[in-house]
Structure formats: C-alpha cells, structure tokens
Length: 334
Image (tube, rainbow, N blue to C red; front, side, top):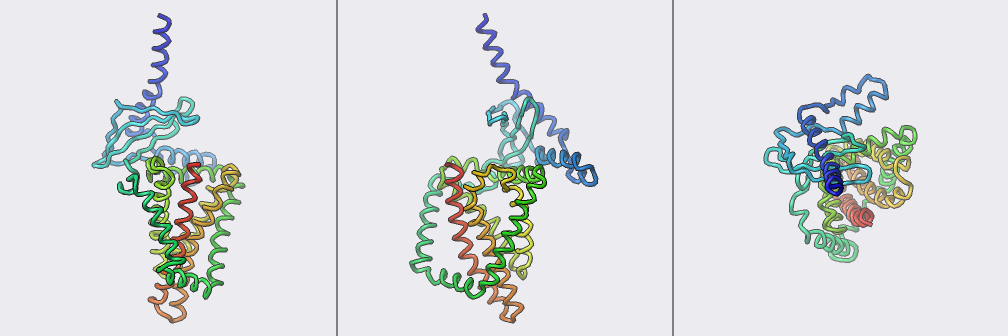
C-alpha cells in the first residue's frame, strides 16, 4: 500500500508540470500574457524593464494556432522544466514550448518544425558534403583555378587599404563600445541576450546539432551568409554603401552588449573570440566593398566598377564566414 501511494505521488509530481503548462498555454492563447513593448515608453526604468522582459518571454501566438494539450513532453533543462506540446499554425506544424521555473511560468513560445531553415539543409549527408566542398573551393581559391578571384580580392584590399582598415576599426570599435556599455547596465545586456536567444531558437539549430559539427557548421554558414552577409550587408550596400555601414554599426553595438564579458563567463568569451573576429571581419569586409562602391561613384568611375569592387570583397567575406562557421560548430559541441 505504501509503495502504491509513493508511486501515485511520484506520478502526480510528474504530471504537475504538464498540467501547469497546459493551463499556461490556454491563458497565453486567451491573451493573458499579452504585452505591448511600447507600453514601456515613459514608465519608470524598473517597470519598463519588467515589461520588456515579459514581452520577450511571451511573444504573441501566430494566427490560427492550434495546440494539442493532450500530448505533453516534459524535459528538465537545468533549473527550468520545459513542456512541449504539438501544435499547428495554418499549414505549418511545430510545437509550443512552455518554460517553468520554480513552479511558475517563465515563458511560452511557438516553434515551427524545422525552424526557419529549408528542410534539405538538415539532411544528414549535407553537412559533410558542404564542408568538404568548402575546403576544396578554398584550396582552389588559394592555389587552384579560382586563384585569380582571390588575387583580385587581395588586390582590392591593397589598393584601398586605408578604407579597408578604417572600416574594420570603426565597426570593431562599435562592438567594443557595446561590450563596455554592458558593464554599465548588465540587465539590458542580458535582455538583449534573451532577445538574440529567442531569435536563434526560431532558426531551428536544435535539429542541426543532431547532425554533428559538420551539419551545424553548414547551418551556421547558411544563416550567416544569407541573412548576415547578403540580406543585411551586400544588398543594402548596393544603395551607395552607406546603409550597409549604418546597419552594421547598430548591429555591432547590440552584439557587443549581448556578447560582453560582463554577462557571459570570461572563458566562454575567450573561446568565442575567433568567431567574433572572423564573422564580424567578414561583414566588415563586405561593408568595405560597399563603401568602395560609393568611392567609385564619387570618383566618377561608374556604378559598374563599384559593383565589381563589392563583388571582390564578398569573395574574402565568404571565406571568413566559412572558417568562422566550422570553428563555431566545433566550439559549440565541444
């Protein structure tokens, strides 16, 4: 009898997180946790900070979200208990994740299946094939048939070395200022960390991790190349260079705060330093190419000549992103 009561007690404890999470999802769908970040404007700093924290922890559900509360999956993650429920939003399947901490609801979020990545990127053989191809292309650039493109890119840097180093220095200074600002207000820096973490959670890196370091490297490169290099640096750079510079100045300041030693362990920061220099150096190089485009226009050499300069800078930037992705994948999984 005592054994049966003990077993029932353990069962009740196991079900309790799922029950609390299910009720939290109902409340979330009904709008109980809804927060408008603009409400923080004009409020005292403490109130504004709490409102911003809550808005990050409880983003609004997507339209038409349907959650299956009868099939919870409970998982312990450090001090938090995560409860996952299968869910569907329109034609997109996924899950709703409820984070419980000390018996209370710490956050709820919708995560689409596969995240924001194309499905083929998560095939097991894609990672090894991509990394092998990447090193082959890198060898061809330095020693093989693609060497003229590499020489052209290095020649561009040599010809405009003042602009190149000024761009590198200016953008890294923005990152440094953000890192220093984190010491003045660590709470804001941690809030930015949570914001970046929430964005990364939507990408779908958890599935990529299952494919090992080569699969993760492929996903990291894909995301940084498409979003960081092409969409937010190269494309804005086509509009006479300046937008790329402004976007990256703001991005680096925010990244500096989120990755500052003030809010992450120093040993982790030191391990991550090569990624910071390689990855940000890639965006710096593309920004330099965008400013070289502007310089060609101002010097009367024409837009086409400037476009060539931007293209040559992207060769160097892509190589840096590839090396950063490979290092970061092994760093994360070490």
